[in-house]
Image 1: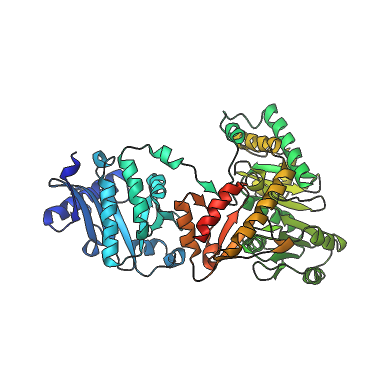
Image 2: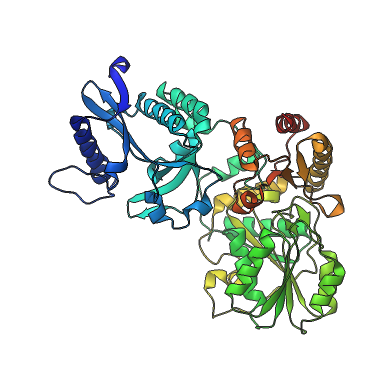
Length: 534
């Protein structure tokens, strides 16, 4: 292949159109089985007469193509009926489809030339958002190029696609990346380039934790595994001030589902406190059990008054329950722990708390909490993938009317190994517990928080929460003067700083979050502040 002989153009001849149909067939029938085969070995796209085709030609041969169409409904409209709800603000989107390159040309400049000309077309037509359905076989490449995934995966069988988008104004970044790849840079090396994480999870792990997760796995039924599990459970309980806990493969959501089934087993009415996204999710999980409960809901970022909580608890009978989030990650606020627990215990009401974002990041005492949840990542500084449920009672009766995986009593009966467990994830968590000085970690996070709040005082962002009820581990930034949190987040990512802004609840409010759970240095924070101020 001689690069000089390659030409990119808008297809406009019968021969080029015919070659498009045949390349379309080879790619989306024979390689990606999205359509059934036919004896003609040609595939005419259903939007063919509305498509604008960019093609790469080597001499007279079409070796690559890209179709663009700006008429609604898009093909994605048929796969995602609520497509617009998933998209960032835009005025003139275009859907790019049928990206196909002959195999022998995929390591050269063809993809870069197609993208270069696609962005040129976007500029000419005023398109401000490019949508694609990226094959799941190449998601790492698309992400590396700057495409942002949204919504669920669509398609069936072996033809699965992730809806994604990119803004044409990111053309320089995308083309630079493609140029690097076309120079035969190893893609895995490029994907491992260090980005500085300001996310509330996963957190940056230490070399020892990384080494612990990388060893050969061993049986979850071995004596070695049981010994490591017992020691890890004791360590987690000491840190959290809890009496007992179960550690299992799964997420924090799974842990909260297990708690929901324990709270509602007697069908006694309960109360869920909601002042953010994760309190809202607890209410949703309680609702799925079918048990009676009500919510005490206030504006996001506001602090509950103890008077309001007391009045709400007074409406519950003895044996009822109250469930709340300690550190509401969606806002960065801390809800009372000891005070609510005391109010509940005085009324013989069961207290339960989501402590997923607080354990390991701030000091907690779960001794008098009946049920609480945490995870292996976030403040515990291990790898994500393990859920933790703390329980005050040493023995809990099994629930035979729920799935065994979700039954806390079953896990207790099985001595913490109900099903297949991950020795690698557990080893990483055990290692983190032994090497972290958590009181020192709490102090440093608080110091970084104080420094950052002062440094951002003259920036173009307001901070949502302040004072003793603000968690030092997460700061929520509210842009001033019409600034876009989404665009700010994308710009910072291009500079190597990854902040929270992609979650729907953040996008809806135009919020941006800085998490200090990875304990960045003052030097790193200084660079971030300078970027936020520029």
